Amino acid sequence: MTDIGKSFDIESVSSIEKSIKGKIPWITVKEKFDETYREISKTVSIKGFRRGKVPRSMLEKMFKKHVEKDIVQELVRSDLVEILQTSEGIRPVGDVTEWDIQHGEIEKNSDFAYTANFEVVPEVEIKDYKGHEAVKYIVAVKDEQIDHELEHLRNHYKKSLPVEDGNVETGHIISFSVMGKVGEKPVSIDSVKVPVPDGENISGLKEKIAAGFAGKEISSIPEENDIEIEFDENDAEYPGEKGSFLVEFEGVSRIEVPELDDDFAKETGKSDTIDELKETIRKDLEKQFEEKSTMLLEKAIMKSIIEKNDFQVGEKLIKKQAEMKVNQTLMGLGLGVNDNNLMGDVKNNLISSYAAKAEIELKENLSLESISKIENVEVSDQEIEDKIIEIANEEGKNPERVKADYLKDNGMDTLKYYIKMSKTLDFLKTESKITEEEVDEFPELDKPEVPEEPAEEEPESEE
Image (cartoon, rainbow, N blue to C red):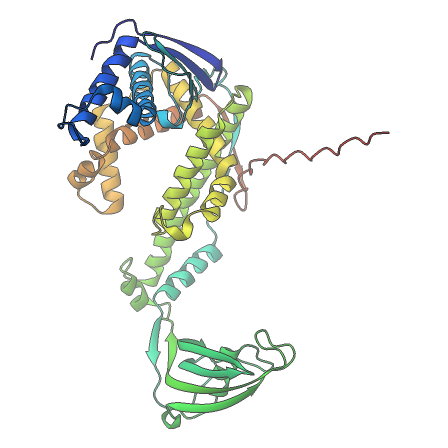
């Protein structure tokens, strides 16, 4: 396609917004119209005309409105993409289709003018980034924390065992199904497992049924049990009502939690003795504490740098960052980002609640990018290979398999970016004034302030 007389101007409206004023030569517009109508003529059948021989004037009367709309969108989009490819340093937020594009009507023999307004990733130049003061918090691992982790691990290995003899006791788990009525309301519960509660004044239908089995000999419990229940006035489900039910008894089980001994340590596959297991847990906690200590230190340094070099980040960029983080969280939970159950208000609320944190993350990343550029921070091929081996060891995978995964979908660029930002953070720590402070527990991260919506002004009364 001929492209003669193309012209455009790029204007910085603000640090986060740009405007492109472009002109598409009439000859380019004309060629696009001619090409489009030739294609339409090949496919349209009109009585009295052979295919491909329908007069252009007739086609224009029939399709002009739709053709102009499509051609304008295609020409402007193509023109903007070409402009961005030849203009360095512009990082637009979102696709061209999301921009605010304004234009007039197409006029014969006249260049087609348009204006595109769009948000950009701000160009950041951080100047004051050395000599910042920060505290590195040191937290020692306590014996009770090791005991807590042991108990958590012990519960992970607990087993559910059937109980077929003796009497039903408190803590046993009753499996049953229920059909019946409370007043005139039907009730149906399929195959639930409920622990036999301890004590009196038991509230709730399932709990009352489970309590009704307490003390009974398991082997003599019939498969079907007709029961009547009167709920007291304070019952959580049916206050002051009466119900009749058919309960299908399915069985009794108990939870067996392993003893904290050498056999348990071997079962975990982590150690051969309980003492070795405790030491393994201690080392794991020490590693976690050191990682958190480093993370809090880095956050403190970046917070200080941003306060000295603050800059604006656009709302669309913040929203995209928040949406990306929410999607990552949902996928980590095994939920599809396009799951209908997560569409609409629920997902939008999650994105909105993350927005303040997303703004901080963006400012941190953009600041690090600026500093890495000023300090000429580079990432070598060997550093990438070493990182891949580290990831492979942590995940118990083959390094070549990990590398192959990163070679997909620009994953290697993402890994290189991560290494560069990590190296920049390491540089900043060497240039900061760090003091260590021993504390019993880590402080909470400062929560970003959420700006309050301005109150609506009441209209002034007319006197």
